[in-house]
Length: 634
Ligand code: ADP
Image (tube, rainbow, N blue to C red):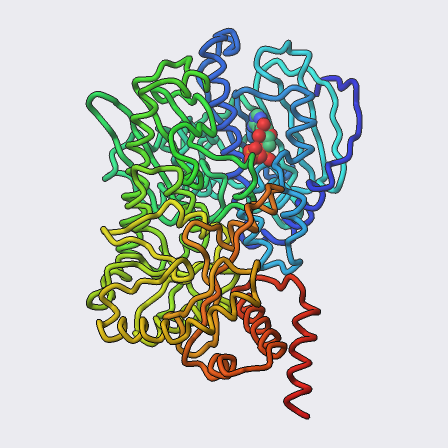
């Protein structure tokens, strides 16, 4: 061992300490994944060196055969992983192996329940990477030197995973990283050639660079390293370059876990080789669950970009629109130059056509999933539906296809599950119905009993119930589906078209005429509070309802704007009354103007409450109501 200088002991970031604690206690049932994680890191390190080596060939230091070597020592109970990738400087080791840079980590860790079973699932979503070494090891040594740094600037990082780590500067002639795991007692089963070989085959066969283990017959005599003969145990070719028919499902799945840093299998994937004017291969995956930081602005998104098999960058987000940011995978281009940069990607017209082709691939894949695996699609929708809803606004050209992938709750099913596809809705439309009806609101409970639905219930017409925060905004971009316009049932002057008979129309007109006097009296009382008062044909059971003006913002949009500190344009509701409701009849015959005023205002406030809108003056409402109650009980 070489001399260690500048030794110091440092504390892990709080989040790392928490993660280590949780991980050691919750990932015990699948211990062997530590090897997959460390191999994945070594492979990334090789990718990075290859990329940096494009412009700085000196970094290869005369050794361009990148590989990973795994050895073990049964007596010392150690496993050693060595790579000749990019390596780490002292600073790199301190930051990369001492902190977690992902935003939202602290919140994520807080959300863990302490229930080991549940948490092991959640930690899987988070991705543990390097720290998984501590599942099997009670001490981990990392010896590393960054490519290009002098031999004297190597680093030795060591930790028992308990809150602190040590770093020292060492001499390390060979570039790259060597990780030595000192196995916990009881974990010595891993210091075994067959076991390691099996784990590598199982999880890391797809890794593109050779993973070498000591040849079995020499395997146990590792005291004398010259006696070791190395043998490649994985397939060692980039998985996406192989023909689809030759790649097994479990290989696709393991590759996904490497690319996406995910613990769980993907829902679906699409592997395509494009030849012709543009040449590229893509392998795109739909994850089975949302990452913990899906809604963080700086959460990783985009594909891994390769150019002619050479890794170029992670998170190349120019190849897919934002609303598909949950898609993971690889794109390998033959047309781009090896020194392509983000700036070039943003301007290159080749990227635009790749982007639109890849977008179509993803939409194809989702359509197929929805059709062939509706149960799985439900899971997809739960995880990513909200993100997909951004689609129609961002991607006008594909909005009909995106609309087809959306799922809604509707009056057909009381549970509030978002399971109705627009195509199903259209298929169930009534004779004479030429519009798709929807209602937006705060919550399912609120909308499902909204007075606006009464006439639709009566006529047996299905209405979509939209209660996600972005739904009203979304509907601003969806004007029609399958040639049928969307109509907000709470908006404007509801026209049911052919769904109303001629007699019904005539009756409505007559009633409206008959109530003109009442309408005028109501206008006088409600005055500035309303844009209009009119007779409703929306209602069967409720006395009154508030409708939104055709061009006005609905409640959700007003709330979004208010929350973002913007000034919300003033708009007044339309007050509609049910001319046959006993309360309205009573109101019509009320001659005492004070009581008329109290009752009118109470009806107006009730309609506002039913709309999910708060009352401007709740105390006033209560006083009026109590006055009436006292009169009633007198
Ligand atoms: P992730 O791989 O998800 O970023 P890890 O905890 O596995 O997280 O690793 C943290 C960082 O440590 C890596 O991003 C990388 O910068 C560095 N690292 C880990 N292993 C190696 C290695 N073998 N060679 C070079 N750098 C490494």
